[in-house]
Image (cartoon, rainbow, N blue to C red):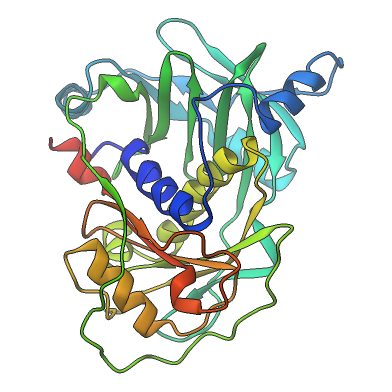
Length: 343
């Protein structure tokens, strides 16, 4: 049982995205998402109350794991009947209540669509589409707090996301190997994963390329993102369904940050290495170079490889309109939840 996380992972992904297309993030404040939701709060009955989580008492084992990883936390239980109801009939606008020791937090959220038209998850072993994962994704703010931002994804067995305001980031996710969820402040983590953000121009040793994925039409109105998931993440998540859920949750958080700054993105394809991949290097630059050698074309405007090796994000600068596939790529070395928990 280990602690779920978000901060270092999203920082690495955001770092590479900034380099790819010169996106610039500021501190969380008023933006496109927060302005839209704040403007809707004056309308009665728009946000329907939803309670997917309830407070839970921690076992001795859970308390030991959580106390070792974070100074202050809330343990929550998923209300499976209400999750199933929401997945069966996704509401366009919800008021999601998250129990916390200092008082419950209510989020005003709008449903978000992550996939581009025709977007799907593909398994490397067969080249076939993976079974769809039932999910609904939301983004918005803390109720009555326009200088805040939140992204929440709901799956059959998990609710994951972040809540940001002037006090920092709070993280919500499932304890791995457990049905319980944890909600905590990022600043309360007892350890931190350092990461670097850089650009690269060297080349890795060439290996025979695998067959290319057919490239799709490029768009400047909505940036279509192709995400490729390395084998180490697949192994850590114990299969395709968990990997897809984890990646979609991360994508929603990433897309929410961009949407708040007026940049619209959609996931054109999620390619999962459910078999060993050619991305076996320990350095981020080498991983990026191998990505360019291996993936000679892709379905999207920008391509992003994610894995556990290295620490941080690396990409080429100002390449959104560049016609060369290899220069429209990025690599993010994210961190597993188990690495976080054992700091």
